[in-house]
Image 1 (tube, rainbow, N blue to C red):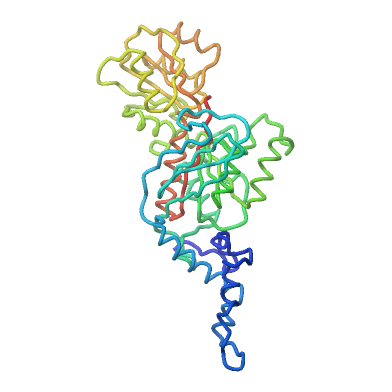
Image 2: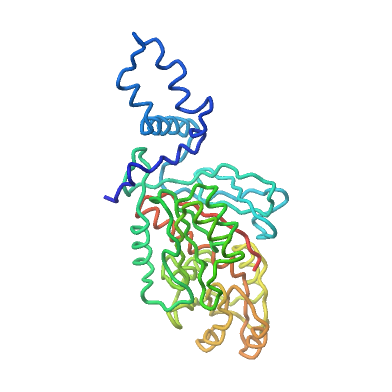
Length: 391
């Protein structure tokens, strides 16, 4: 059984209006007529206990459970993601994003939320699913320690195998046990704020902080991100190459699943390139249309566009220079996220077709699969928040 959080930890459900001391707070309800009329003004032990901090927390928890049950809050198994909602002219499915960001979501037992570029929009209610397992708190919601989650993530992704450009694992320590895990692609300021609004205890991302060659000083935008995270008491977990490479939960594996491609083999350092033999020959237009349909944005296509495509290779993100290794392995086409000026010339000279399908677009799915697996194994709630990026 997973360790329970300390009994001194305030119940997060007190955030639902129970701290203010207003008319709706448990304290006012208990002191406004509830104890009047006892003989001699004496209050029985039960009432005295209720007036303690622990008693108020317990009453608030029970009230929250009653309200949640009446609204049909989901506490069942994994639910299918809901469609992100349009806000103030922003269509999250198009992936446009600019300016200051606020999160919004339209979910029913959902794991999907979209960060929107409109600072005037308020955060809508975020309902994340709860899975079974883990250690039960007083309210029955499951929680684990940051160490437990980190150990499971490290072991699952075999992080010790990789030499990476950033630290993998726990990058910033929060202040409390983890009951709600929010995941996203990049630990941007917008995503951190959205995770805070969603009452996350931990944030799991593919692109974290502290990259090799970056200025290590906490100034400017990096200071803003770190301060927001620490003020919220949220743990930050980040996994880069280990999440790309995992044979089942990784970005490459999940892109293949999204596209309907079976992984027939893998090659390159850490097996970062995957490939598939298509059942019949396709042309560049057909592959581009399928990518647009499945990922939601139009890819950039360069190279020998007339070449029939039977063997297709891919590596998500910024793997455009792996086109050389893919071509040497016999690939007719190579799919990645980004494109450089030199990529066009390489594709033409190698005689292959190159598809730049979007760094963010190709790497949305691994972190979701990893968070779902953590929810199933450890019993924490988990929710995906998308901060759209057209690149």
